[in-house]
Length: 413
Image (cartoon, rainbow, N blue to C red; front, top):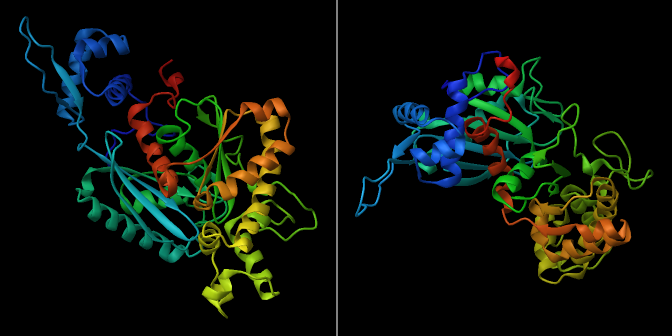
């Protein structure tokens, strides 16, 4: 396994030189082409130090000399840039119905992405083999050397401790964490994260939370979750479980939730819940154009089909989304009264419904929040689509190349 990436949880002493190299790489990521003098100014390192560090980074293949335009007078400055082909990162978003994979290069440009059938999170025997097969497929599509893949970020639904590399909902391997097991099998740096938090990371680095300090990213998927962005960072809470938005109880006498409680928001508004409600209503005689399409195959009606038919004007499907939006807006009112975010970003596959889900959420939010707080918040649909989670998962690795904030500087005291 390549070791030039930081492992913030490692017991190894992290060299100051590596930290300085990270700072230089971050400057080049943010500014593209820079001269040695530019880098010295941005990092506040001495010019001789910058020169020495750049020599090493060139030998490591992380950066390359950039072409410098000829000057009429004087000697052109030495300039460098990131080598985008030096390394690649894979991000994986394991959903309950589909797995999305993405490959980015060192400049964080998308090289390839792929939607594949969901892996079975409950089948511990085949999970690693399935993941390995899907990783091979995305590497082949990207047409890259597997040895250049320096890390894999994985987004998983349910309760996850990213710092421990452990899922509390799925993937319990007799004391061995899923992170350690996959690292051992693939010989790659692995970082895992909750799927909604990964989606929030995707929005923070690539999407509509860029330059936003406080935001809430809501995952409208098979389940319902959220990622909290506080002061420009993902807020995990004490145990890493913050953001379980879908488990706000809206009806104590409601359906039983997977968490063991009754009437959680997720039991009324998740993709799974909307599908269940639709099937029950159709079997009870409700009218919908879905019946013409599915006939006696009502059990095959999916959340995706309901959104498709709603977008085509089916009143039954529109009503389902409207009721879902009302519940979501009510719970968001509770959250923003406490949290006061600048922006709420709706993502996940349910966000494809667009205004059909956005408008009832806005209406309900207005009725269930303090007016001044409501006036401060902007509610938008994600533009990253299904790639938000997998892109966010890549940042779990890239932050170990470009950032230093996650490193405990007390190690050097």
